[in-house]
Length: 171
Ligand SMILES: C[S@@+](CC[C@H](N)C(=O)[O-])C[C@H]1O[C@@H](n2cnc3c(N)ncnc32)[C@H](O)[C@@H]1O
Picture 1 (cartoon, rainbow, N blue to C red):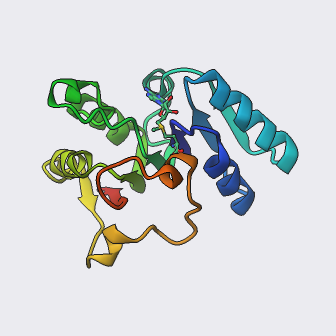
Picture 2: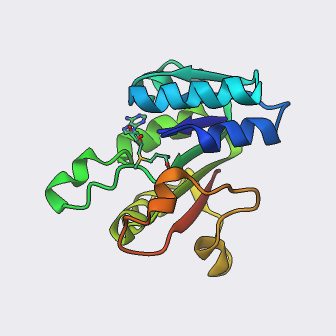
């Protein structure tokens, strides 16, 4: 499992505690976030997390094909201004790399509270035949998936809409 941009690491450590038999990689370039995550790891005693301080794209580039079961991208930097959209993490080239490292049937779980980023991600993923949007009813994108624990950024409610929860399967 991979969490991209884990912030303070609360979600990552919570998942590692909930799934002791799974192995997690967390990537975050922000030093204070990594320090916070290390504290949570130490306090919880979990041993199934490895961290990288830096850009998730560098980690993904080094992962073997079909090596991940699940990727979390929770409340990524929204870059709401149109002229900054190219800075968003979700880009066609990035989806190429996600598709490469995910196993068949593996999931990407994405959340944002910026309406335009939700639309952007849906547009990019639904036109890409390698990803299948798993929503069957409105609650599937209006409510978090089972087992979700609120993240620090989510709790701040800084976006322009309620959180949108998107699950995609690698087909
Ligand atoms: C808005 S914060 C959300 C943090 C956390 N997921 C949460 O929900 O509380 C976005 C995070 O993504 C991190 N980030 C930005 N670009 C990244 C990249 N290329 N690779 C990994 N993390 C990145 C930022 O440092 C920041 O901590």
